[in-house]
Structure formats: C-alpha cells, structure tokens
Amino acid sequence: MLDIIALVEDFPGPDGKAKAMANDLIPGGSSLNAAMVFSYLGGNATLATSMGAKGIVRDFVTDDLNTYGVDLCDICDDSDYQIPLSTVVSTRSLGARMIVNGAQDDCSRLKDGRDLFASNIDLIQLDQYERPFVEQNFDNIRAFDGPVILDGGSWKDWSPDFLRLADVPVVSEVFLPEGPRAFAEMCNDLGISRWAITRGANGVIWQDGGTSGEISAVEVAAVDTMGAGDIFHGAFCHAYAETGEFVAALDGANRIAAKSCEFAGTRSWMRA
Image (cartoon, rainbow, N blue to C red; front, side, top):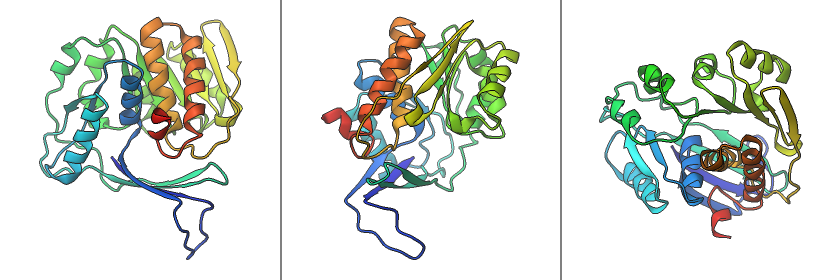
C-alpha cells in the first residue's frame, strides 16, 4: 500500500485540526516493511504482492523497492487493480498512532505463482493479506521445506487458515481474542510448538517446545511506533534464517524494533 503519514504532537479531537510536525508519502504494508528490513540487514528479500494498474503509484512503489534492494513478484493479473492508500497519523506525545486502511480489497485475479515457490527460498513470511493468493497456493506453502513465519497483527475471520500454514507464528497481543493461554492451546492443537507474542512496552513472551520465557522491552524515548511490528518481523526473519536460533532472533528483533520507535516513520532509523 501507499502510506500517507503525518506526525503530530497530539491527536486532534472531533472537528479539530492539528498542524503536522512532519509529513511523508511512503510505500508501506506489513510484508513490504519487513522485506525492507530483511534487505537492509543484508538478506535477499522477494516481496510477492499485488501491483496492478500501471501509473504513478505503481512506479513510486517499484522505485522504492529497487532502492532498498527488494525483488518484486507481482502476483496480480488485474490491470484495473489499484494499490490501496493508507492514512496514518502518529503522535509524538503518546508514541501512538491512528490508521485508516484503504478501501481496496485484495486482488482476486491472480497470476500462476508456482514458479515463485520453485525458486531458492530459505524462509517464507506470511502476513494475513493477499488471501486469495495464499488460498490458491495453500499446497505450495504447506509443501515448503523451510520455516513459514506468520505475522499476526490482529485476529481476522481467516486467521485459523493462516495459522495452519505457520511453523512459527509471531503475533501481536491484539491477535489474541481470548488471551495467551487460549492461543497456546490453539497452537498445541495445531502441532505448533514454537511461537511468540509481542506486547509492545511489555516485551515478548515465547514458547519453544517445552521451554518458555519472556524478553523485556527495551526502554526508549518513543517518537513514533508506526511499523514497529513490521520491523520486528523483518529483523526476526533475517536472524532466524541466518542462525535458526529462535530466542536470540526474537531478542535481536526486539532491540531493532525498539530503536526504530525513536524516529518518525518506518525508514529514518535506518539512516541514523
């Protein structure tokens, strides 16, 4: 998607106005942000996503991916599909954000994605978008030899289908409609023994087989938490693909995501 971003001191009230301290127009989306981080940390990332109609927005997103060294696999075969716009307002005083997602649905007219899964891939991350493509390639993902990581930002009606594909779900506490214990039981029922829950300022809890633990949050002076979860996932996937060390990868990702919150937007921390 394309994010239209404003950083303000405080959220305006109903019918209120606020002058932005900073503005940006930047490609976004959970897997795009994670792919950027994966590439920034030295990995080779391919983003499979819907690009659709030719035009200025598609060119802008493509140029940005090229700048950060992320390969692009356009899975959409609908020339009328438009990349969604997302409006994001972040506050410096609270380190919180408000997001209005675009009205555009996932592309449902798809290209054949079998060649993507035949390429040399060490790890797959799924977010819960591009649902038609995931459904079309369910068997290809299930047959993949490497780890499949799930980025679960919030619970959706189709979340159980994505969980069935995951080897390692790393989810937000917002993903848990009935709490961590129910999530642990759900994972156990699905044969998932390795998972983590990110809890923002309350750190990360994890389970790895019969072992479990907690990683404390890193104290930072938060300016903007936008994209912190996506950055966490990109950093986690990079470390996990490199070493296979689950808890160490979580710990490193926790530190990188915390650092990103000291800067506005999703990219400026990379240039600090």
